[in-house]
Image 1: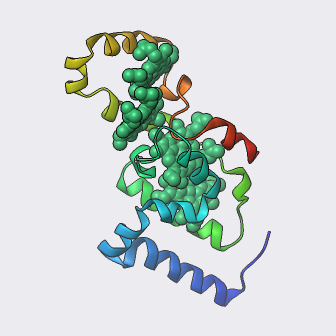
Image 2: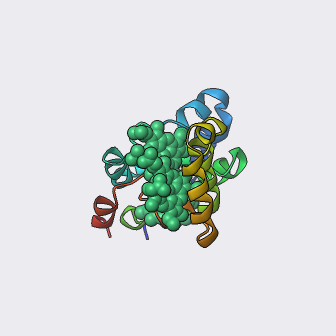
Length: 150
Ligand code: HEC
Ligand code: HEC
Ligand code: HEC
Ligand code: HEC
């Protein structure tokens, strides 16, 4: 594990605060863009480019609400700046149910229900057996590319 000296630590804290909080609206805009995520998650960017969802933003699937995202984001900047991470081995999302709810918000809308009632009915049956959409669908990342990093 690489350690920052005291000055490095102070710079890291200031950077984290500026990026995630102190900068206000501008910082929020910046940190919610796909290329910000991609600056740390290069593998996921590639497997996402080759998925069915390359037009869907990272945060459309990966959010658990504003406060959680910011706290988790600050922690991640901290871990990265202090060299405590292995980018080749990110953990799986810690909140699969919320991710699944984000899928529902796009794919199970009232409008789709009217156009394709049988699609919804079939899926209600599918969901009786599993707890998330990801149990059956590849979703945001090409599985083969994603596996290559492990
Ligand atoms: C400063 C580098 C950095 C940036 C920028 C970043 N991440 Fe991460 N991300 C990490 C690190 C480090 C981890 C592993 C955290 C851990 O070990 O708990 C991680 C883990 C994750 C995970 C899996 C664990 C979890 O909490 O669900 C997801 C999903 C994720 N990031 C999505 C994103 C998205 C979406 C963005 C853009 C809004 C983003 N990341 C921006 C460094 C970053
Ligand atoms: C922001 C909205 C949004 C979110 C969130 C979202 N999707 Fe999608 N999804 C789309 C769009 C747009 C397409 C491309 C539609 C197309 O090509 O017909 C798509 C395509 C798909 C397809 C392929 C459909 C086909 O016609 O082949 C599947 C399966 C799918 N999504 C499942 C999921 C799952 C599972 C999740 C959650 C992990 C999810 N989606 C999250 C918007 C979304
Ligand atoms: C038990 C497995 C299973 C689960 C769980 C599941 N699906 Fe599916 N999904 C399928 C199958 C099989 C199809 C193709 C046949 C059909 O439409 O029923 C499909 C088709 C789709 C399609 C494409 C429809 C099209 O026009 O091609 C979308 C979008 C989709 N699912 C989204 C979701 C979402 C969102 C969830 C979570 C609420 C989900 N699925 C959960 C098995 C599953
Ligand atoms: C359509 C939804 C969707 C989109 C868009 C999406 N992801 Fe994911 N992502 C997922 C799901 C679902 C998983 C969990 C995969 C699994 O369960 O095997 C995941 C996993 C991850 C992980 C955990 C590491 C791993 O190997 O699984 C990271 C990090 C991540 N995504 C980052 C991103 C980034 C960065 C973007 C944008 C460039 C992005 N995701 C776009 C749905 C999505």
